Structure formats: structure tokens, C-alpha cells
Length: 384
Image 1 (cartoon, helix red, strand yellow):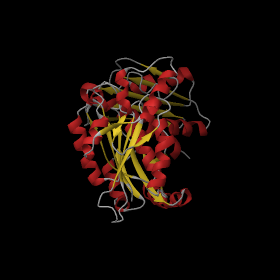
Image 2 (image 1 turned 30 degrees about the vertical axis):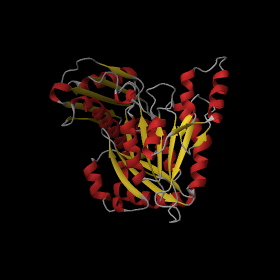
Image 3 (image 1 turned 45 degrees about the vertical axis):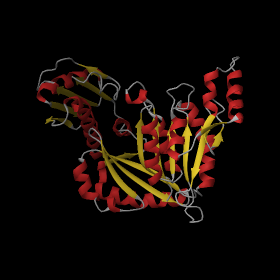
Image 4 (image 1 turned 135 degrees about the vertical axis):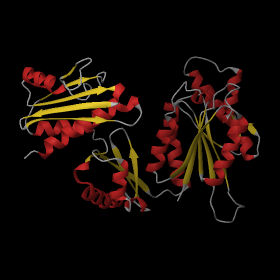
């Protein structure tokens, strides 16, 4: 199976000045091509460290993709670093310089002398046109073993750091190159099931055997009050991958039942609100200590500052009577106690409970809201 690693280059990323979105886009693209992504790494603008990382990645992966460091200034080190990693010099390419001049001329300007740096690439590199920016890209191919041993090539692909430039070149030039050069004839599809009501450990106990599968693969990711189950299948075509995923998904849903509340783009608040709407009921809510978190999930939510313990149900009765809603949900958080109080009133009656939280204090509000939304969902769905 073809493998890849991504190296993001830029000291500004390490300093937290900008957020790296290129890695995620590249990872999703490689996943769709059926390429296994082994590692991602971010390196500052240092030729020696970048070169070392490239050499290490080439020992493990068929494809090494770098982003960033292709600009015209002295702190844009990618060209020199790739050349150093491969033991070659850089060379000036007249055709790439013509691309730079053409792009800059579209803005009514002439290129400065330092922009000639962008027309230098490692010796023997394949130049890749960048029609939306001034930094040409390049691909350098190397055989992992002496030629003739039938192990194909390794490729270092250097792309711009500007996201819209990177994405354009990737989809216009790099994807076709990868498909042809590495005979990529498989796809990888992913389906994510969303769960609430059981912790990651308990879910793991119920589906542990599925997590040992090699294709499809199954993995868990815990969030605040929600656990995701990822099912990923590699196949020759989309229908075959879908069939593989469907078989595993059916087993997961059979074992977990109503713990699974949705898949892919489904959101817990949307599922809960749909459950209320299907019964033709209206909903109101109140919150305290949540800074509007519940209000952003549920329309017609009132915020009550400093609601005293054990007074939530009384406040909820008043809110329901005023709004004439069928269902009312209340959540109040007490940060010092690391606790939350929840109450619900439906046409079937009232109920409330108090929970304590052992995780990071700043996560208590989101955890409480997700638990309350899932409580609302399951309560409404269980009503006959």
C-alpha cells in the first residue's frame, strides 16, 4: 500500500501565529486516494532540520509532501533543504522564472531580483506550475534501492504554504501525478458514528473485537460527552467500500442500540430537536452558568445568572408556563463544586438530577450541555 508523510514548514506555525490548515486538507485528500498517511510534522525555517526530516520520512514513506517555505526571501528554506536531503545542488530554471514573471506581470509589476530565488529547484526536479501564485512547485523522484530492483520510486513533493495556492496545485497537478505514478487504484471511505450515554471505555468493551479488524478498521475518539466510532474501508471502488462499512456499522448499532445517535454530519442538538419536533411539541429551555452555550444549541433559551442550587425545577416551571411550551429543559452549572443540575418537564411529568464532573473544569459546561441534550433525546424517543 502506498504510504505518505507530510512536513509543514514555517516558524510562524510553531509560534502559534497562524493555524496549519494544509495538513488536514492533504490528509483528507490522501485518504480519498487510498494512501496511508504515516506521520505529519511541523518544522521551523531551518535548512538542516528540514533536510533531516525529509531524509527520515523518505526512509519510511513512498510520498513526502512539504508545504511552505517556497517564497522569495532568505527565510524560505524548502528548496535548499530538499536539495540537501537528496545530496544535490539547486539549479536555475528559465521556464520557472518565466512563470514567475508572467504571474507578477498580471498585477502590473516587474519582479524584484530576490524573486529569482523562486525559479531555483533541486537538480533533476520536475517543475510544477503554480497558476495562482508566484512560487513554482516541484517534485523530486528517487529510487529507494538501486534501479532495476523493481521497487518503484519515492517522491518528494514541495507545495506552497498559502492554503488556496496549495489546494489549487494539489488538485490540478499533484493528484493526477500521484494516480499515474503510483498506480493508485483504491479508494478509502470513512464513516463516523456518534455516540452519547456511554463512556469511551464502556463502548470499547462492547466493540473491542471490531477494533482489531484490518479492513475495515475501527477506532474510537472521545470528545466532551460524545464518543465517535470511525469505520474506514479500503476497496477498489466506492460501492465495495460502502458494503464493507455497512456490515461493520450494522454490528456496532446492534451492540450499542440507542447509544448511537447519528453519523457523519449529524449533531447531537439537531437529533434532540428533531425528536421533539417529530412529536409535534414545542420546546423552551433555561441555562445558568453556561455563558450562552445551551442557547446556541436550543432556540428560545433564557439565561438566568447565579441560579441557586435546587431552584432549577421551580425556574423551569415558570419558564414553561410563560412560553406555553410542551417541553422544558434546564441546565445549571456550579463551577466551584464541579457539578451541574439538570431538570426536564414534559407532558408526562417532571424529573431532575445532579451530576458531578471529574475532568478539566473548563470542559464542565460543554460536558453538561451534551449530557442534557442526550437526556432530552433519549427521554423523548423512549416515550410511547
